[in-house]
Length: 368
Image (cartoon, rainbow, N blue to C red; front, top):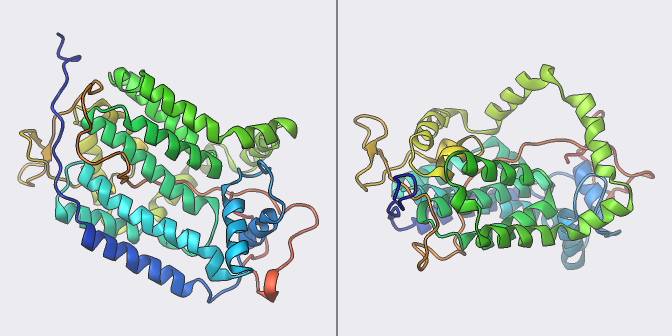
């Protein structure tokens, strides 16, 4: 058997530091909810409330998930700022927990898990979206959850986790299309890094079918209405795309994370680059590496001399036996969904519920 085909041992992980990580997540949730009613509706939220009153399979600028959540809020709480924004606060708190879980999945002990959770909770991207309901808020959580599934498959070699990944990807696609690019990057990255057995199997195919099922309402609506999202995306790309905006994008990435912990990016990139696990090597540019200052005592290489950080060995093929580690229901990761913008509100405008002042400023565009 060639060394490239030989299964490598699974990486054992420490116990999840549930108490402290959940405490950080709860503190962020409490802060978001405490501030949720102290200022009026954002222009995007008014648009989502109006979309919730006219539910359909899809919309020009987004799939159905956020309007559907807004509809649930209207049914449960009426026109309520905290009632609408509770989804955003829950998503932000979930992202914090996922950050700690991903650190654990990559071999991080208690301190690494706490650092990951704290770094996630203090990210400007998380803080800035945890008190407003929009697709970007949920997108951060879904990217993180999908990243965890990828890392767990890479650690355990158990491809049955792709079923869970299909659910995460499907619901994520019902929220925002951009997560599909992440999934495609993971697939081709695994192919090019020698991990094709991890993505070319019946479990990955079943996961893809599950994800596709969630896109049926949106695809049906798009096809019926002449694919308006594609036309809108092309128009936005002409307005905001091009090489001239690359520097803006780079600066935006730096502003989305905790700059004080940016040094962890270097540690994380080195960790993933030197990993023997195909699914850890190629996704390195798609995952936020700030949660990867890890320790894994499995006889691997020193990641940074004198640091105590170890680089674990990996697995290249699917396991044929039982699950290793946590059950598929355990999610953990952190990732980003880049913030974009869509066009104006539908013709006719959107009324301002309950007489609240909108936070929309002149020249602003709703977040897509």
